Image (tube, rainbow, N blue to C red):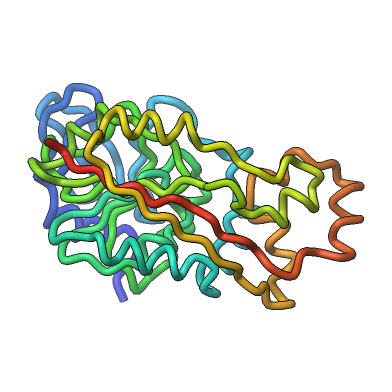
Length: 275
């Protein structure tokens, strides 16, 4: 089995034309374990197989393994399987970019006739993503406002529960390519919100309006169901979301005595095409 650094180097050698330097926007060549652009800006592949394109420090305090590990367990247990099934029907041949890819499980569970790319600002997330050894993909630490991907290099930009930058999305999308964005709807994770004493109904109108502004011919699919939480994952459910950050440690201990037994998944899947 290839080491992670060698696996990434091989993948980048095949796809070097899909990247561009985030500093000067020129093309890269691969020199052993380094990406070097026409102006000699250099980005090394880490031992984990990740390239850091950020000009700021990556996030190592908020989105960490403490959250990503329970999230991975729940994703791989099928909590989002119906959502991913809908996304799968929307995918077209070509390269797929997962925006805010976290620990990589969503990207792993989707099949695409093209190459896979994921990025995040969370160091633990991208490092965990490279542990998914059966997946062929490239993960990086990248800035949403200045993506290290070439113009018109992607067929699909996937945006699941993460921020958007439609200027950059349109730049990297080929003609007629698409953005698939998944946003929470009113009752998303209502059991978790209720347990934490937070407002249960989620308002997605501003996010929806912004997507509609950029993709006026969008299609919209509502997906709503209940996922029965396996007993061994009920505690993980309490730790899988940033919602947990608002709760005191004392309250967490009390809630953990009687965790939710199910999770409501209620989302809108938005699909828009570059004109």
